[in-house]
Image 1 (cartoon, helix red, strand yellow):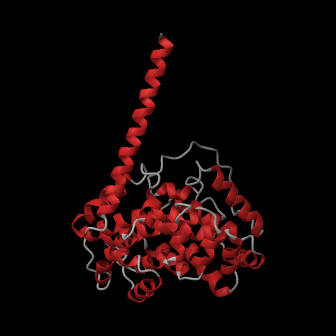
Image 2 (cartoon, one colour; image 1 turned 90 degrees about the vertical axis):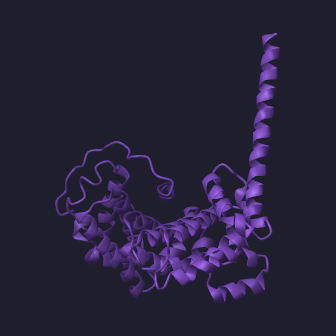
Length: 340
């Protein structure tokens, strides 16, 4: 008797779970349809950006729904590319609508918090499309990342602009997090390296961290390492920015940012010519005890730093044993991107 009741109970639970899933799918489908209705678009963007983690099939739904991609992209516009994309695929026409209004606010800088939030909600959905294996290649083939570059090229440090840069970097970060040489080849054919270097110099700590993570992931690919080390100009452009960041971190430490900087240096040391150059341009702050406390709880990064010094053939100025520690605090949603 108990067994029979249990069977009925599990059956009801399974049926309820299936019903809940159907309701979620219906909700997602309705919100996606609302994206192409101008009067409903802003609220739909907000709801979808909040619930994107719970809708597992949201990325294909966004991509294949007629007019959805056009609605999301209206927030940015790059007029020449817009015309080109319209010639290639008329389905993108409506997708670009949500992006058009934002470019005039970039220069002169008149971007409001409300406009920035609306664009970032659209970008959050694009990050979903960029990270999904079924839509990533389509995302690249449509050259959609290029629409983010004007946001990365801004210099205003106001909160709306910083939020816009950070969210745009999150989309690029989602692309590089999955190791894919096609992604690296695409990015290297664009201006992503100079744009990341600009953010690494003037962005907030979190923006700098995401931008450095993107450079790190490019370097970890053999094609990316070869590209950056192909000319002295490219190598020294990257190493100069990394060096300036190390100098700034000596005054205001950030273990998370330092971790990605050290990993970039370590990867550069895998290239013989770059390794030779690092013997003279590796910051002294990485050779002394400046960051001992900063790295106290990060055994992995300490090992990277030790290996870097071995590769470069530079002895630590003041060797010191740093005890192991406990894992750091939980990461925020954006910072989880950096764990790849």
